[in-house]
Image 1 (cartoon, rainbow, N blue to C red):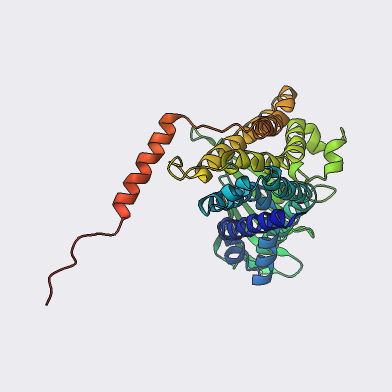
Image 2: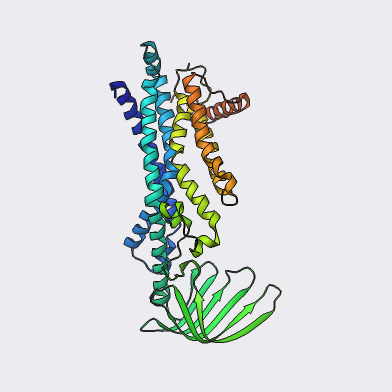
Length: 391
């Protein structure tokens, strides 16, 4: 790689990291704080909480990475244009490939990295997080809940225990379940126990009160009743593995006898094509950024920062990708469109770069952004008036 290409690559990569790290940190912190109740409600250690936080990180990297690349490319090339570096490169007779090659090389590397995270790290992280949550709520039932106090297990599910004995034996169980909007359930049992896996509560010698929306109440007595703890319930092979938890090999060749797959094969189809198409977006976004900011521009003609153009297009393309991927869950006819979005975008961008065509945004959009920019400048510009009379 030539010295000038290395210089451009280094600047873009530095700006990419400067953008990626703080944005990723903010989104990661928001996601982690949304699960802080795992520590406060279940009495988990801070180490367990940080492990759960580490499981969340691979799920957000592939989403943030392409947009950080857009900002890194457009901001770097715009700064080089404003500093007259791009005009000097053109005046020296250098080809545009000097600018294109480092950008495309970086986008390919980041696309491969995104593919690896999405298909290998993310499924394991999701499963690990679910296993931690299941274990935490098992501890909540068997050892953390205080006697004679109501505690919330999850939204709409409350438990009270009169006495706790060794061997996961519980006395005086009172359970209120409002999770189903069609009816309310109240359980009372003289005793109960948590299974060794910690995800099923077996109640003995009790009764259940069921109240329907019209106010009618039915009472059923039972000698033994196994209470399902929803998402924390284990099947014969452990936690149920949903489409997002499965390996790429399983998604490519699913087992028709798998109960989760048999229940919703469309979700597995959607997940497969999401994983096989998401890694193409860094390349598509990089090419769009080159179209927007890769040419020499006059300072007076730049009414709106190129980064705004590129981000608007990137958000529109990402939204289209998400929408089409969700539609594949309903029908396999939408599968080709999942790949058309990034591939067609890349093809159009390559054509525009090869023919040296410029991207022009609608005049109404440009004028609107320009007026907003001038309004903000007047609103936040420092006052130029006199600061007061002399003493």
